[in-house]
Every structure is written in C-alpha cells, then in structure tokens.
Image (cartoon, rainbow, N blue to C red; front, side):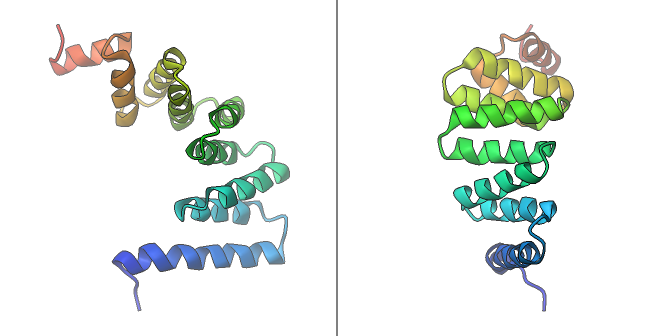
Length: 161
C-alpha cells in the first residue's frame, strides 16, 4: 500500500520519528539519527524537540555545520535571533561556502532590524549561488535595488537603466 497526499504528510513523519528514536535507543551515539529526527521534529512543528536533537548532534560532532544551521533556524522561529545568529556564525566558520546559511543569518539579522548586515548576507548568498531567488527577493526588499549586485540584475532584466 502506498501513502499519498495528506496521509503521507501526516503519517510518514511520525513513522520516521519513531524509527529514528528506535535507532537512538539502540545506539545513543548515532549522530545521523539525531540529525534526521531533528529534521522530522522541526517539520512537525516541534522546534524545542528539534533544537534538543541538533544540540545532541553538536555534542557528538562539533563540526556538523548543518546541525548548527538547522538549530539556528529553529531558534530563529522561536524568536531567539541572537542564539540563531551565533549558530549561523558557527556553521559558517565550519563551512563558509553555504549560500543558505548566509541567507538564514540574513533573515535573523533582518528580524532584529540590522538591515545593513542582512543585506550583506543576502548579497553573499547571491555571490555563492547566483540563482538563489529568495536571496534576490530579500535583497530587493531591504536594498530596494540599491546594492551593486541587485542594481546589475535589475539592469539585466530591463527594470532599471
């Protein structure tokens, strides 16, 4: 039997969580099980549970950049922008080439009204991934087309001379 639609969206994550929990019960050092369960918990809306799992991943592997990034996302969703920015900074120290981490840090900076730094992060995300549409949108929202990269893009699109 194949699950589709709403059934997949509701049942499969819960089954995944149970499977990862069983794997962790069998091997408390299984980093990927904590990380994947954190992804599932976050998708289910359990941000505190996801944060706990990402924290355990970081305890087990201090160089797991994606765990810092995803914990930062969960912290940001819960309103802890400082904690989120700290996690994004750590993720970028480990892996400075990730456009999505710059984008995520930009969102947290934007949420604390640090538009200049947010704009710099969106611009860096675009430099790393020139097809990062969400970064262009946020860059435009903040810079209203004034940043050099955004201005060049607008000229290219024929929206600015």
